[in-house]
Length: 153
Length: 288
Image (cartoon, rainbow over all chains, first blue to last red; front, side):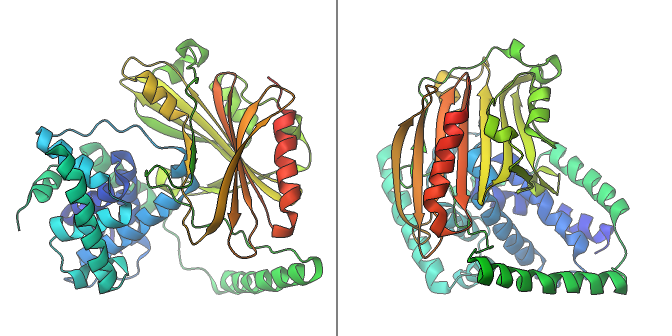
């Protein structure tokens, strides 16, 4: 793919890719690394992405890269200190910590549903899982969030 | 659709530094773009690919050795209680002056690759491992790590990850991979130094070691304490794998101002007893 096209996609979607990676990895440095690697992969992609499907393709690619990253020996042994996150309020901080207490597969579904606004069918396509799996994960995530949030009340 | 989570995530954006890094990586990579493989190279590559399964099959049939590395499916997701974890409440930090001046003032993180563990120690400024087994000619360096997320994009034998904050180093982790008499070994050592912005608890956490295994991958996990004649007391974790897959052993201990982690597995479940024996021999061979 041409560099000009990659830069266009990067400018349009880099924040969305970064946010999904952040929701998976909970670490700014790792999320930025994954974000960069996703866009660099486009260099080896022979043709432009289908119009209208660009964002979904990038998010699928990001989810796969994050899963690989979570499984890597490297991450297993080196969990970075990440206290660089800044929050505008205590409520935001609590919300961030609560969502982060979920397992990565639940966080991803929560992010794609509540942030990106995708439907369950679209989430299933992006994460390569069944619609039933999306429903199950959503339901479990909501239950866990309720449980954790009730402790703050 | 507006909700608190969406409002929160809207505030999280890729940093300007990361954007600039991407643009420079793009221009560097552009210079490296290669032509399509010529036909001759494609034919050679196809022949090599064909030979790999044939050789693997032959090795498996003749020697009964499985050449497929089965270390997969391990993941850490931050949840305690599954798998195991090893902590060192007595871990101590090294003085900053132990490290070379150019490392002392590190701001942010960086990864450096090396051809040998000794080269990593030379940059660090002190010795971490004094163990005759790791200098044995049977201990073969392997290139097990793919550091594509660190912008290095190649498989390496040994690397050091440095972590700095507010213009001061706070941690260095050296990792290397080896093959030794039918086993695959990874050796990792972490040293920390006192940092005004890092609490004692965080220092202990930096020496934390743990693994969560996916339940379908591992049949049973057990752990035991092993005290070697040289005074090391290591926690040895045994992860028995499902199917006919080799057991993985992991030893962790803290000594001489550094935490150590050794992971070992064989290429054949039949050799599990030998694998554990090798791990014990490695522990016994440490000199501090």
